[in-house]
Image (cartoon, rainbow, N blue to C red; front, top):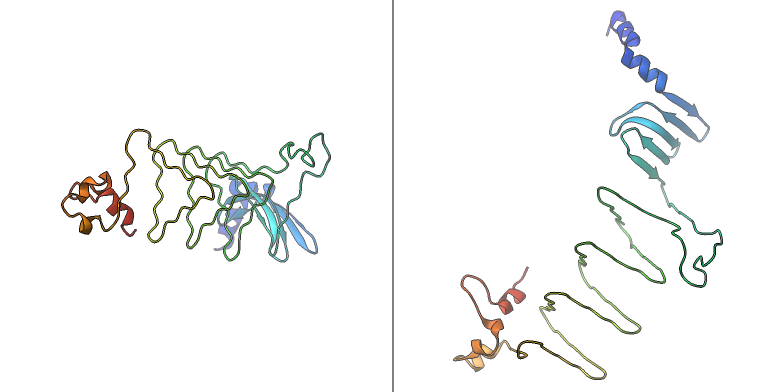
Length: 216
């Protein structure tokens, strides 16, 4: 780039606008900048960056970032109010995380995620999925109730054990209660399919029992 091209760039409206909007305040441990271009998020709006790579950044496109190299703590709810939760467990919202569009993603790459509280509610407008690479354990100090408005399926590829310290009841509202065994086909080969409707098979579909036991 020769001298004329450099001068042309300095005289351009884009460059003058950039210079007019850019600011920088440098401190011994951090810098505060705004109005400059960035590689990923367009023009910056207000960015506090420390010498160790930590900071708080806002961009004109609407993105915001906070970064801490070791730990990040948020405290709230310390001002006393009536029924603030110390006794009743109720009170106003102290910390709120809201997303109007997009996805809220919480991830711990190499450690655990723990949520503690008096009551914990999970409410979904559609579905709730629990997927564990190994075990899922639930424990209740009192009653446990699971209600499904449609089908409810419990399937185990190995043992399934149900134990009640008191009464155990199984009720079917509109049918007789069907039970079946993997030995039905060998013990009663002539009529095992009549023992339970779960043996019914419409080729090429699997029977309900086979589909439950299918791997994957």
